[in-house]
Image 1: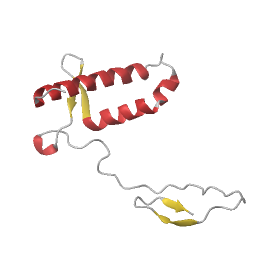
Image 2: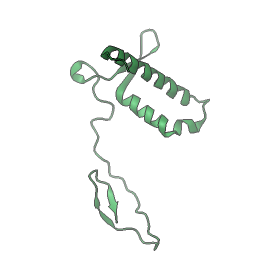
Image 3: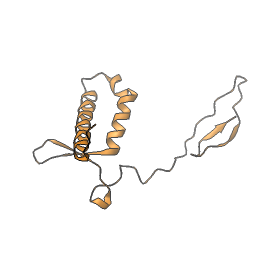
Length: 116
């Protein structure tokens, strides 16, 4: 890892460009469909979306930049940051071996139903 912040930032942008190139190859219509369903690829996509912006430069080539704080003149937090509340989801309770549903015992810190 480079010692200077400038070199670390340049290396991070290089990694981001490589990551975007990998995602482009995986989401190409000629690529196998199962490739885009790999958990590692899903994680890469989310991490890049949260930490980098991608625009088209004046020369028509994609330009990658790190997200910056709004106070610093950047675009701020990643998309969806304003709505981080857990959404209620209707999920059928799993059934015990007896065929009866499990009884709920409360909610965890995120509002998910806990089963006994």
